[in-house]
Length: 638
Image (cartoon, rainbow, N blue to C red; front, side, top):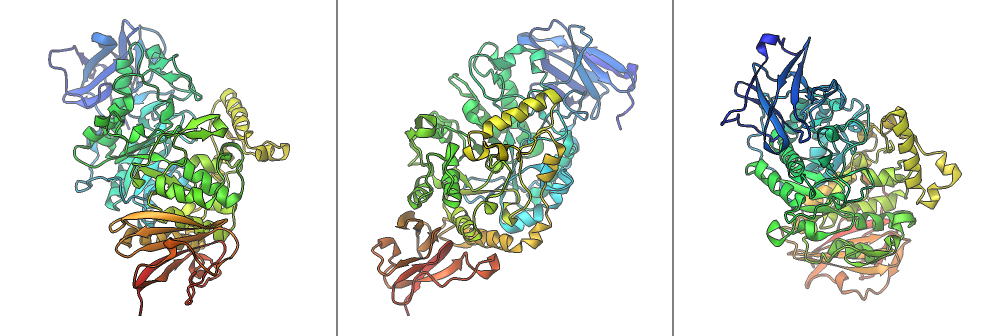
């Protein structure tokens, strides 16, 4: 409940030579003596803040240089509702830098005092890049309740599984009652759909207590189509210089770009500072256009590190052109990002498992050599011609550390792009799925799991977005047009099966059934055992690994050799049984005075497997069971 506000209690102090110390350049900051309001509205001649409760009370803001307006309203604090009035117009506007929108983007903003929350994570030191296991989650569908509180209760199983970093899909408030979050409009306001801002803080605090890091997916390439009032304050938030497939591009390098840059750069630091987040995942960075000498991504990277105040942070980016400049240090004219998503690995692995290479899978065959190259070099396309786009793709990345690439078999985009939201285990046979899971979780790159993957969720993951009827129809048609690039989804029969994004049932169907953790215990065991091997084995963890090589053994079979004090082999056969009566491949040769010993098999009955003998027999012949993976360690000969 809001504190009662009387007209006599609302007073504004005019600008002084020593303005209150603020946490953010814009927004409503709780400071000593009241709340300090500051907003950028360069075309306005007058700005008033209207405090809303049982009646409205108005305070005029002082005009600063560069189009800013500000004032201190005394005897006001956490919980007060407010909106801005520009040039005495009747329409009231929410704050572009609102910390919370309790009634959604079209309602009033609410003052939030971040210091009211009592953190218990003082000993948490953050997270570095190496040794992590990422888990992408959508708060609205992770549990039936779809709240921060419900999600926090379900974190212990993820910690026990071996997950180390939660990658939360976007939470900036957006219009409607459900959505993926990529059409956020209030970038400083965690959506009211999942709870209060302090519920988000409580979620992060609980994660840290379980030794789980939390990073947030943020969208700095566009604003959503409904509820973004930034243009009312200044059209200079947007740029007409660049194309953007999701809406108007943002202005990071044009006229009056300084305050726009400040708005977004401050937002990157805000999540680290006020929510103790451990980093960010930057969506579709290829559409963040900036020709400035100091690219806005580099500036965001610096701000994130500064806001962490000594804690280690992790910055991950999605970049479709695969430009490794993002990974270079700012001192080397890069952007200081720690990790990039690697679609090449996903596309090749998916083709290997399903046999389908239509649409944007066209340039992948899923061959053993592709998988070996992905394990050794990260991106498969590092400047070669890419037929699907009719141009070259990627940049040289041979010197990039493996942990700088996030690899995955599933993520929010790729599962939904199956049309019916089918999970990968539903599109291939169980043996191949188990085998490729071993490749994912033991490869030297950083693995990412998508929510429910660890227990082979039966619920689909579909595209859903709640919009006004006019927008909803445009989104539905746009989705059909996008999926039509897949010939298999463009048939009338399949088009009739595709879910309506605007139907609430589509959203409800995408929610996880967490009781499947017990019913699909074999899948949980598979992931937990592989992550334990990755974490505890000195060679797989990298503590003793000195290199990696691989060889093709057959049309669908390969071996990866991890060199260390005690070498390891990962043998993968996605095809039929393969006999190697002689094995003219040096990577299969054990170290001098040692032999191979099987320490893990994807065909273990604990994982629903059918059993399989070790791939090497006593006489040295190799027989690779089909649709299976094996891990071998060397041991002294007796």
